[in-house]
Length: 179
Image (cartoon, rainbow, N blue to C red; front, side, top):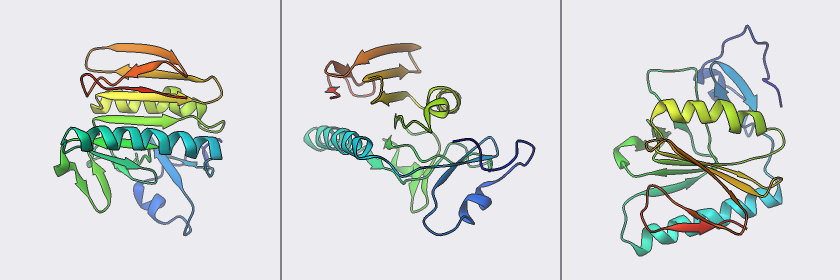
């Protein structure tokens, strides 16, 4: 879905907070993008990935947190023109977390592509996450049955098809088979 406002109108996080109750949107470079309700497939994949990550962290006595949308990510607190709600967010520096969301780059972000979010997930958000310091970014695309895994620190991009083990760069020895 296109931005809700004209290209020349710049919005801020305050505009996000002033949306009607229950309306979800993201703010990227001052443009508000409506977020459609997730499909059953989207929710099923999100729940599966959340459980896999949560169980890995728990089993390994980790302190990282995995958080599902809706959960706000403020990549840079000095920037009031960007507000994101990734499908899954993994944060290992717990000082970045408060009741409003994550302040600073998460360690790992997963976006599950919806028809309306495709250009944002593959281009706009990928650039935002890479430049903000996110260590790892996965784009899970149910339509293409593929996962694009970006490990920004190592400058590695790999493509996997559903059913293959996808290694998790931030957790050595951990991989997830997305199906």
